[in-house]
Length: 485
Image (cartoon, rainbow, N blue to C red; front, side, top):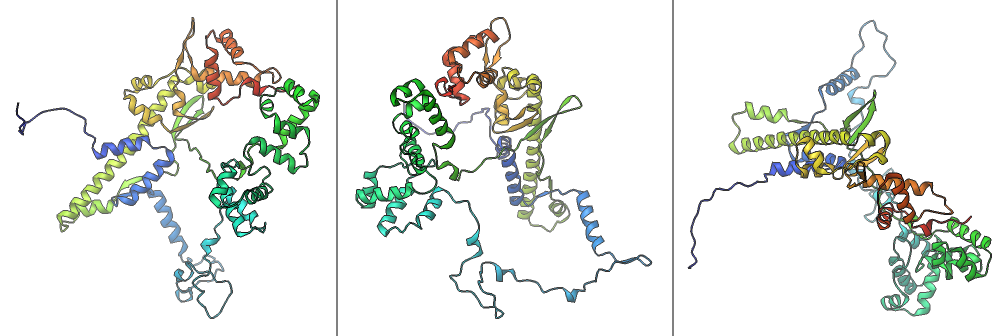
């Protein structure tokens, strides 16, 4: 059959993602902080959209301004504030004269500072990181220029924990130096603050800290240098046999190591930013009932610009292009406001459904969390599962039990013989509680936790499942939790 080109009409139904629909979906996914930024950005880009400060606020502002210049009525006692006339007002300041100048010496001649003078922006404070802190100390160590190159290379290869991530051979190759020079500079860096910096591993870091305290030949130094795996598992019997010391001496040495030393000396100087959580929804108990309130604090109230509306309605002299532009911006602003309102309404409905399904959680805490999936909430409020997924992603609710992500309320079901299913999160919460209440000298093993769950809830959970939940809770195994009497 020969190939040929021809035209054909075909009628199909398909979903078309309009720009307005894409914008509504994007707004639905944003959390509280991102929504604030999106509103500010839209106000800046769309002239037909403006912030509604409210008639009451505007009236108060006008009243305050008018009362400032109010004259004293006859017969009323006037104050003793001296009236300042317009001619007495200081001249307008030219702030460009002070924009980026730094004058070290006062001069009546208004001399222009030199071009290489420091700016006031050079003195903005910033928290120094580990690298800056070490280089500041190295500046007082009287290093030679070639030794400085080695020192900068070593400092640049320290990770956030303060450990050296390269070997001596690589340092020699990259800095074109010899082994004596590299070892000398490394010793200089390891003598700096904080103690233990520049070590290759945890064992060397702990030993450097003990050496700084004058305990290089102590039992604690022997343990961290030669028997660190036994220290991690707290195998006192093996440590007694390996070191030849009494058990009480081993216990005192380990207590000193765990209380006075730090395995990661560089962490206090890390510049990692702290991410703060701002709840999107509040659920509070008021008069015996739970009340849902969306977090609208500091969100700008939006409205259509009355100026552009009047300009479009009353002015017939506008060109066609100008009218089309204003009309397009007004429609875009109106759709944006409706999308924000729809977003808030959807979040409220989802939170209302979660409150119905997980009422026992709000009353008693995580141990009473019920199994729940996206389909349950979607069918309850007659929405699609993808919409529920977008609403619950990266959003948080402030409850009487604490702050939780909305995704937290969805948990898989664990069947139970002769009763309702349990949520996996409830099992994790119970495992955490068991470990917190255990005997620190005889901690519970994963198998023992599994047996207690069977006896308490009649739920058969394998040991490996308990181990998986324990790792998700970031709880150490039994050999690392054991403490000596």
